[in-house]
Image (cartoon, rainbow, N blue to C red; front, side, top):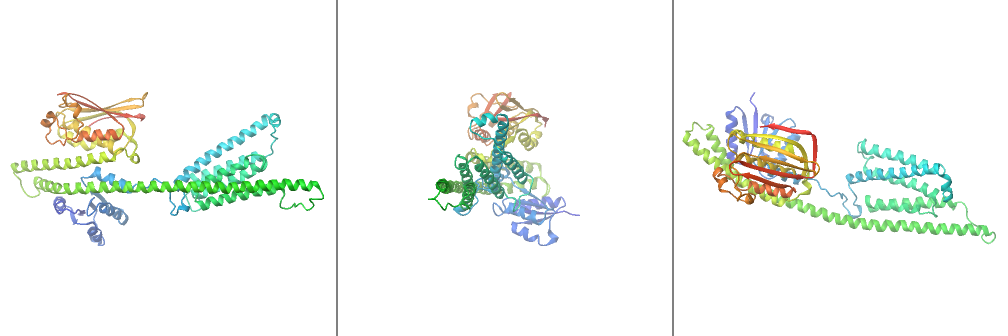
Length: 570
């Protein structure tokens, strides 16, 4: 059964070339000028393809990606691939476009802004750890009370009842419940981080009220620990929700005082008859003043902290807006660069596709003389295409700088192997062997920039090597200094001593290099220099004319994997 392939590209020459090649190999081909034409055709089951080949930038920047997403949703089993010569430029664009916001304010109204679930989860874990510390302190207190009860009595600390043990058990059980809900239960409507925090606050306030009652509600500073919960509620919740916490705190402390002083059911009625009633009334008056003062303090703290929190969140919103603007500007810049690249490269790609169509005999027999001419034209077109890409890569690296959002630990061995896989056909064509023998490690940096760095160094090594030689890639790890270096050594034409200081300059061509390779753009090592600077890497070069060149890349702050040793030959 003949397989059906759909090809979507806005360039008619590319469509024509692809159609001719695929038809000659026995495929049934449907060509489409726009993504909409292709998607509309899928309403007819008879033309649904086995494979879709999509131009990433058909019609607009996002049309190719949107088409791929719709295909995946409508036809999950259909294979779809992108066809583009802008791979290392298109990926950062889509990464920037799809990157989620890192600021975590999700409220819409100023008074309702609160932290995201992710931040709440982190703080839940912090609370759990802090609560374990409190539990540890309570256990230590009980141990000391058992061992040195007489000494504590001399200090005025009476022998405790069972309440410290009860509080310890309650807090421990609650902590295990919080951990179980957080890590082992599905996030549901009634198992959200916000509800988890609310339960923690309520349980903690109940336990604190018990502690306040037994330690002393007016004679010790224990009631002031209520303020901590009010402040934390202002940080984690909206102003209205934190007000509820302040009301709960005030109510709990008031209940503790009223219960302790029996104000609900004992009212002095004969103050002038019995002095004892007068003393009790005076004591209750003092407690009432203390209660009003502390409850007032609770609401003052709530007001001040909630106002300050709103100010901080407002500034965070400004930062978020600024970040959004920067991100949008970066997306617009990348989009413009790719559109310019596409417009410059599209005619060259169309010309080269036609040249290869003729060279491969799809248009009939071609004489050797015509084939040689076409090969030269194709080579010049290829060089021009690479120059366009190199110039835009250079500008993108300059503007990207040290993008901390894109940084992470990079598997150096995997990155180098990826570069070798790309360049292996070029090396094999000249019988150049690439030998890799290195201990793997991870380095902190920007993955795509480190890949550009190694790809250009290895490509240079291949370009300026003699045929039938080898390129050696090795590593040295210095655990004492937490450093590692990767060295790429070729056996090629080498570099004159007078040219070494200039090899990283833009568009620099040494006479020796031009004689060996007239198609160089003079930009490759400039890309290496900028990528190294953006990732805080050092470069060292050693060379001798006629003997070869060794490029060393030095990585600080590595993570060494002792069990991984990569040794292979290509």
